Image 1 (cartoon, rainbow over the protein chains, first blue to last red):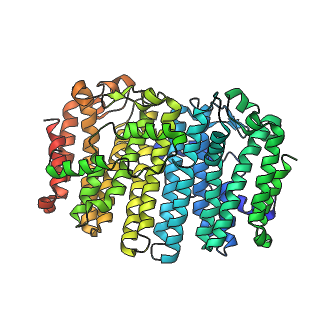
Image 2 (image 1 turned 30 degrees about the vertical axis):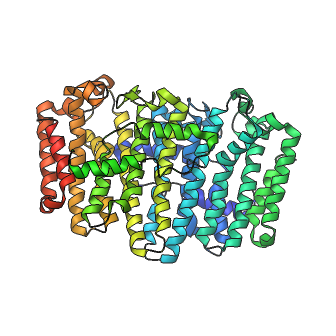
Image 3 (image 1 turned 180 degrees about the vertical axis):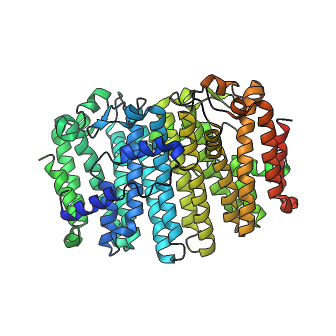
Length: 298
Length: 298
């Protein structure tokens, strides 16, 4: 993911990561501090970069997509804060730093997550307000927001989380594992690719191609995450490895074996690559993501 | 709150309470079950009724506001589920039934809350999609959604929750208590009144009057809730009383005394009444709410 364009969009995300939080009163500054703590804890910023890159490929500026990109990172961050809670994965560290609840307590961490999800929606809605008199862009904004809601909500990411939690320590079927991966991870990533196209005013063919790209890349991303939990280096990853096995989590390597998992990931990455082949010259960010993911397991 | 119109809108809410959840896969049916459990656990349905009643007062049908009314109840329900968690108020019962986490476990309860907030936004967004080619109504929908986001998010309800949690067992100032009440409760209720006006296409004067009504009623509502926690009957309320004191919560009676609390609530209800006096004939629902609230403490 080290292409110059990826790094430019990642930098843009990090420079503006706090800009779309609503004004928060000094009387509950802890809410701001706790949201800020997790928002500035690093990370690949994969989702916002994808959203802006897809928008740019349609000929629209990245800055038009910026509020939505930041909103997506708020959603990603809320999901990590809640996922790390003692009642969920009970993680003490995330990206080499203490998790939100270890610093601010469980109550504030729950509320910081709620505040971030609310702020994501507020940021997208506020952008719509700014374009109330620009019919074309308003429609793009509404369509993009709906894609993000779908990908991250009760028939997307949250559904995947529930299935994941419910299948811990159980004999999870391959079918169920695919459902978990598709919803927990791929649906959100796919929604970034599709919503980015909507924001940029892309045509139907491009939306369909990016939808295939997003889904395959998202699935590969989760399988590779599972693989790295088995073979990865703790220091390099900034988090503990072997966690999935310890939690009795259903993972691709556990169900299919390490070699079959690698093979499946490579297949998915190839399918993703094929979906955007015809846009090769403009798809530096998206090709770079595939190169990086592949390099982690070969 | 027993006016025929209130009951009609409450019934409408309850008949459609599950209709705006997205299709949820059988593979994570627990998510659906847990959301449904709390959505159908009763309650006054105050917020959705207010939203639809305000919309109707502008001459628009309640059914136009229905998806937003249901979305508001999803938000209210998510906030109660998270508020009841062991890390927060640690309540075993809500409205005479076991709280969500007592039935489904903490992990699912956290995710049910996340799913409900996501579904609220998805429902509002989906409504916008339906009106993409109706410029006038699309603008109303965007404005209304923004009001709801503001009232319930990180500078509204979530801010109030954080301040509430942080001031437990502390010497809370009167100023801070006002901040908590305004954000934890009044901001959401006010947003219902204002968003309802936007949905109905109400004029600026009506929006301002309903904004005053909503804020005063919301503040009175919370002060009366505090008072009932001291003087109320457990059976009638379907929840434990004396809880605030046990948790060391900052409440109006604790800081100002019972009589001063009643006086303040009555003052606020009068101010709310005055704000909508000129619409008396159409304001059955809103006057009925004031009558009911007053009857609880005199």
